[in-house]
Image 1: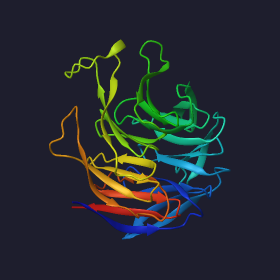
Image 2: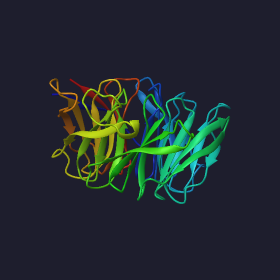
Image 3: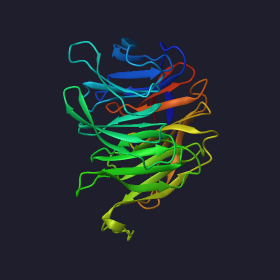
Image 4: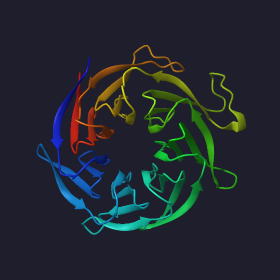
Length: 335
């Protein structure tokens, strides 16, 4: 069995902390929360400290933040219905663009692998796709109204311009640009959860997706592409996503976040029962019927709800979490 070792506990925000995001290089991270501020933290020696506080971009709670793949830009999604784009081009972080269009709270933001596209989603039930048109210029490329309820999370595929979204309507949807007319279409609807889907994450290759829900389960989905050797039909030559594994019984409350490590294959969850759990695919797992086991669990990782967990993209086995308890914690998975 592995163990989850607490390396650092960090404080600075006032009130609940909603989001944490590693910089692509893994030596810096950003955090955001109820205090309408973004903090950028960096490691010097063995100490993490706040290097910058960005407090003039939003009028309400900041729900999520994400670094661009190049690491030059930071996007923040807020309950004030805007998404802010920050960059350090002048040496200091500045808000260079504010994306407006959503009717109310923006819940999530995500950069495509190339950095050329940005997705946002909102309580207004819509998903917006923005094109990076130039320095600090963003143009709306699509407004997607496929969900029937609040959209909680958007995540881009790790290698392709395919977007996944998770919603209060209990579904996950996939979107891609049509080759025919350049319109963005919903290409798949993933239905199996019986309550809100809070978060989703792709594996390293992007052929599998993990989802977590208010129904206290984790689900693993696999893409079956046209011509697949499993004999799964693919109408209209579109990839079909099937739920191939459900993990239940490990969480006692809603699971708010899930992160699939691109380096180790481990899956981490952040839960409303204050716990963090780590799952590992078993050695005898089958492609079309995968099996996962709980590697380790920290039942009282935080004193209140765990809102976000994210694996460090550059340091294998390092995990960051944040909570309603106002703390950020950095963990290491040890064998």
